[in-house]
Image 1 (spheres, rainbow, N blue to C red):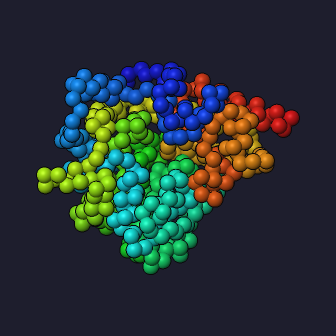
Image 2: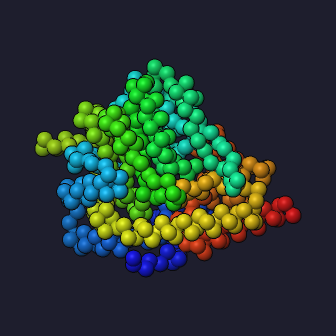
Image 3: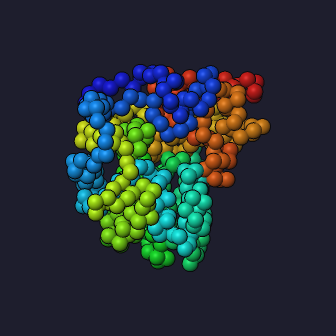
Length: 398
């Protein structure tokens, strides 16, 4: 394995970085899911080669990209996907909205809060109804975790429920759903004839012992009703390059999905369906899926060490904050309710510690009193952020 320097602090201010430009210069940003690591060398080299060509006209993604994705899905999950079952899209959020428009225009979308905040806006953007079946918070010996109340989920489904929007691995609570849990979810959706949109953008970011299982691999019936959304953006830190993909194995469902994005993210040109994706996005994706896995392995090791450090530091120095069991993603979910702060914790830590975290309430009312911390950063920055938070609490609490 190549020796990658994830300890290197790369200056990101003045580069248009949303993460670093959102707040004043004295604020340490530990919020949006964006790594502070330089990407795999193979990605940089591929982009530099493409730029040096000097012409940036309409460009078709290379056949090698679909083949690389097919190979990855087979190697990682034993999932046999055909190239024609892959649909390129500009991002997972557009994909979620396309899925909702394709399957739930005459009904509602079910979500499980606390969950990734765009899930809460799908009904507004796509003109569907909105339903919720919250996850269940459970304390553990060293923090807390979440589970699914399957009876409550099924009871919440109505004849209007048309699509179940699943986040797996789960953002922000960090769960990687087990095969048994997914099987129960699929069975409920089958009984109610509900389509599944499975947001699996964090599927390669597994920090614990539970492996990722693509929802569509549970059975032929699961594959027939599932729209799977994946991307290199979180895995390889290229969200600014605008490239994602959907895997839809049922031909009719795939056609519905494509038609839902027609004129927005897809178009018919010369008898072919074209996706409005960024040339640099598919260049980076091809390099990542062909030659980026060594870098990812090293990055995962680094982020696991960051997780362990953060959890140990919080347990020793800020024991009133509980940490979620982080199985997947690099986003640590923190329960700050016992601090009894005078304002929401994200707001308080920003004002008092100059650390920017995601406010838990943005993930649903079930997230009130929580914050989400990004661990994909050099250790020196993680240490600085935790120390600032600790110092601020000590100042207030004496």
